[in-house]
Amino acid sequence: MTTSLHHDSSGYITLDEGLQSGEVEVTELGAALIRQRPGTPPPSQAQVNTLALVNHSKRALILLAGEIVTGGKQDRIISKDRIVPPGADPLPLDVFCVEPGRWHGASQAFGGTSLMAAPRVRERAAVAKNQQEVWAATDAVRAGVAEGIAPGAEGRVARRALSASSSYAQLENSEVFRQRIDQASSTLQREYERALRGALKGKNVVGVVVAINGEVVWADLFADPALFERYWPKLLRSYVVEALSVSVVEHARASVADAQRFLGEREGRQIIEVEPGEYRLVQIDHPRYSVFELASLWEKGEPLLHFNKLRKEARAASPPIPRR
Image (cartoon, rainbow, N blue to C red; front, side, top):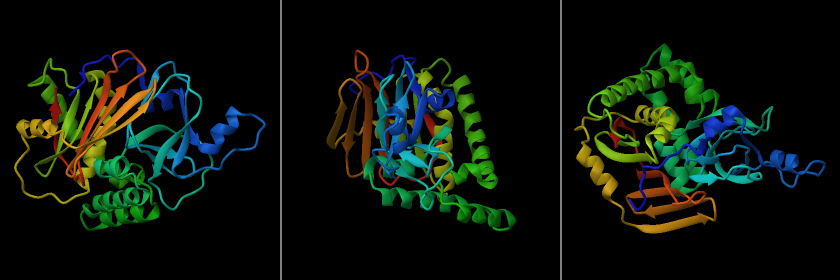
């Protein structure tokens, strides 16, 4: 990698931290602009693929592609990694809908926590950048999780929950789905904690590489262990949802060497997006995979905050391989 991942991340706030503290507001587009210009008519109506975001914090805000905000007129997924400086004016935020069928809500604002979409949905938002493909991936993940529940009363309850709502968040809101996600996440969390006490003790774990039926398909790496730990709980659940949504096949367990080979492949067409004084997002696009690197231009040294590599059309995971 061109920039070291070991960088102090304490000067940044995450979306969940900002929403929970009230330092970050996410609303339908018109609502934020009305607050910005009191007494004036709304310059625009709410839009499916654009929200408004305000960072009241004294720290820069990190947003990751795949984070889902729930509420407003319908749930949305953030389309790309970016950084929002502290104290910025309300800005338009590019999003995709992950709740087709609802366009109403008692509040224009979005909730105090966010979800992380499963890799398949994240991929469609970040790479395809197409609303129809995001909906298709969302439906496939939800249907796959329901299909994996055994026939009988529990299966019938799951299928009713699935049909009652088109929202991705139904996977967390439904008791049946949530119990399955909780159980699998707890098992992997215990394995992760054992690794930290054993082979990884004293190591700087900054992310994970994820394998799907024995094939490495995904990686999320962060600037330092502290930033990784802030994202780890919802990242883990997103990997579990992906795993539950596909059929398990007999396979060999992916090795650390497999993970290293996956990270080492970096050929392809570069697409660079720069927001002066805020961030630089580099995408390396290859027919088999895409790489995303988010670097901060808000501070000196232009540190790399998030590295994401995905195999296109990623599927579900065997246990993540901790990455130092």
